[in-house]
Length: 203
Image (tube, rainbow, N blue to C red; front, top):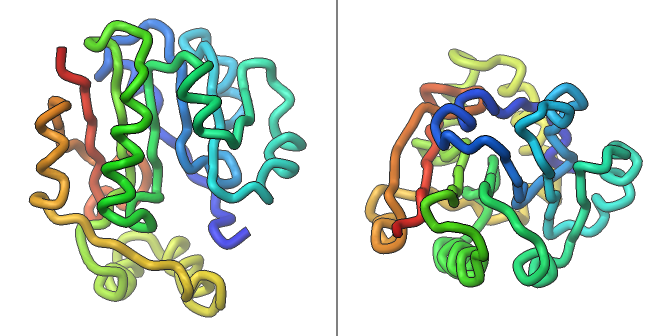
């Protein structure tokens, strides 16, 4: 896979921020899967739904995750219509989603929410502050291991075909109509070069 890199999400921060006793997570754009056994077994994790556009990942994810808490469903309509979740995590993918497509995606996943609105959150993680090449030249100063990984991406023909989008504050201002938006530290690596957003659905 192109994005074959391991990372870890700060679940403790998410739980403390949301004050949710039970997390029912939809990992939107799950990739190869960032969830380790220790995290899955935490009592406050009720379930994790994995979804990605790349159906080639299904076989790999089924081999990796045998836990009952983890559901691998690559049909977004089925997830929205049949699954119950109170936390959506969009991690390290916003830069590969067009701005209009992101808006439609968020509208879609919030259309039929069957839980109390005050208990629904979306965490958008790992949002780049700078254009791709500027970040690339800054990377060695902050994360040399990731710099080497990104260097290999630039040599990948499939990666070169992927569009890269930068989101300014104005590009995401529409979110404030439906959500309370909080800008926070990045919950993955690259604390300085990237940031995260928390969207809490308004009552």
